[in-house]
Amino acid sequence: MSAATSELRLADRIWLAVALLHQQFPQAVAFSKTEIRQELAKSELGHGTNPASVNAHLKQHLVANVPPSIGKYTMLFETKVGFLRLYRAGDFIDPRRRSSRPSKHMPKREELPAEFWPLLDWYEEWSRKVSPTQPFNWEDDPLIRLIGSGKHIWADEHADEYVNRLREEPA
View (cartoon, rainbow, N blue to C red):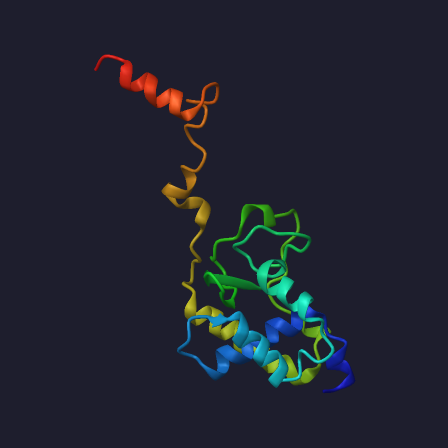
């Protein structure tokens, strides 16, 4: 592994490993955390990394659709428990990850050794092919917009008491 690669941020290393997996297995929807760890080791992107840090990144720091801890990156997306893929425009982002500045969803070209630039080019093309031209906006979904509506109805009483009261009222 080159000296430049060893200085990469862990988030960028993990993104690169997942991108490599997507290229190797184009039919796969997502990859297990174990497969991602194995790719990190195989590609030497994981050289010198702390396994606990890798686990934290795969569980929370990089995953767009789970509540954030300290990091609010949106580099990965959890398709089902324990399975991750690269983030695509239009994927659901946990509202607590939103901030005034855009979240990082891929490494910056200037922060990567030139040997990885083709992966960035591949990702831009891949994400255009896979995601629609107009990405789906979760905030526009009528069911998502209903989240939290009606909570004022039983704000002053327990839900069970509210239901019992409704059952006692004449029809």
